[in-house]
Amino acid sequence: MSIQKIAQLAGVSVATVSRVLNNSDTVKAKNRERVLSAIKESNYQPNLLARQLRTARSYMILVMVSNIANPFCAEVVKGIEEEAEKNGYRILLCNSGSDIERSRSGLSLLSGKIVDGIITMDAFTKLPELSALIGAAPWVQCAEYADAGAVSCVGINDVDASQHVVSQLADSGRKRIALINHDLSYKYARLRERGYKSVLHLRELDYQVVEYARDLSSAAGMNAMQKLLADNPPDAVFAVSDRLAAGALRAIEQAGLRVPQDIAVVGFDGTELADMISLTTIEQPSRDIGRKAVDLLLNKIDNPDAPTERVMMDWRFISRASS
Image 1 (tube, rainbow, N blue to C red):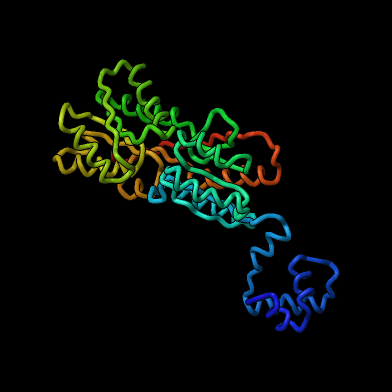
Image 2: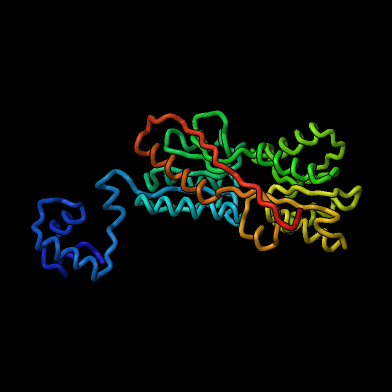
């Protein structure tokens, strides 16, 4: 349905319809009522391009996600979308896989003014390249906390969270605590490993074994756990995602061992999966992280000279049957 059709349906001029859409106070009450009635009847959606021409904004946000298959990323995106829509924005989703060429393709939307700003969830190591591509455009880094630089960001204290997990396991008598980690190009992976190692050092625990999963899938977690079981098995495992922990649980079960009696397992993220399999985990406020990222971005869009903001969100340790 075009604006011309709305004008015909309401029996007014196209200019009158345009003034109604722009909330002009020069339209007669009777004509405004007829136009609004026609819009409601036809379920008319204003043309986004026309809106962009009027306001010099597209009211679109580009969201670049490293892996949309990751349940944590999916929850963050839901929070982003909810907050964006509440403020009259829509999102365009790009599953970049932290690949700079795929990112370059998505970021071309900035130069064409198709989007007003960008929220990234890419690996921290990609930020310098992304910064060169994004330039001065409004930008927020989400879930990969940056403690320096010009980009605003929102996340949690990964070191504190992982220290809490390992301390809980040590307090329960576990002495051979292993870590299933992921790609160290992600800052969260480096920070969680730092927290893990720091507690082992403080507790003077000699057993320190890190197995790196090829991705964040359950299958990768299972494969990593099988390697840990092959030689001097741990009595506890901390995995940096719930999906990796779920795979570890499967491998332990297939080996004929008991959880948590033989091996305790703790995950990270607090996804729905953790609740389903009774997994102890660190719960991240995923949707709130997404919402806060939008708040930071809209502030940057409205106030280009606003200072960089770094927001730390609270996390929660949830104890369940796996530990």
